[in-house]
Length: 298
Image (cartoon, rainbow, N blue to C red; front, side, top):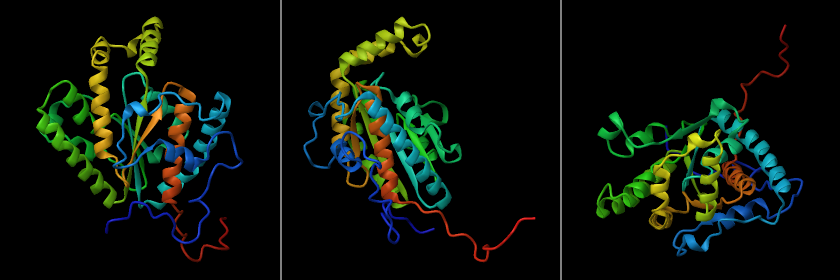
């Protein structure tokens, strides 16, 4: 099968590509919001310049309503993508601990057709994974044509954790930036749209959420002592994220930095990014077989 283009924004006239929120709701328009969060290549990206909290000019209730509207639209577009069966979407979620990766994925993807959705998580490589190159396990779970796969953590751990913890020399993790760009270009050339989201949480908000987990018996299982070790390396992790985002945000495979101190706006913004991605793909339901008109089932 020949390689498919990343963004066939339209195959013939369509209103879907320019589709924005209808009816209008509070806050910036869909395209404006997404553009505001995108990291453009070569723009001198600095993580410290990006906010960890933003109300986007809307109340919590307005953000929840907008999330619901976008999720409804995502449902329609996802079913078309699945029916079309030609292209796919890889949705990468990265963040510091307690930024809300699980909650974001749950709130954005819940209710969608499970036949076309998968969520993959990556822990420290073990067994066969540790015997192969670091991208081996990742490539195996990339989305099939017609599917959407969300990565809860991802191949970026191999330029983040391994750097901060000193698991590999600097020359190794620096070389991996090129690997990641090339890997994502391969996916793009084969019809997978790659979208990467960093949930940007503040150190103060992380501390509050850690304490909430410790104080709540129903949430305490989420906490591990190693979380405090990683928190002590906050500055190092922020530097690693900044470099990784700056080095690998491309025109075709962009990063988006989403303020994550507020859950409702965070979820809304991530849903808008996924919705915008699908609107740009403009998937179409296949044409039915000829001669089906007039058939009556008896």
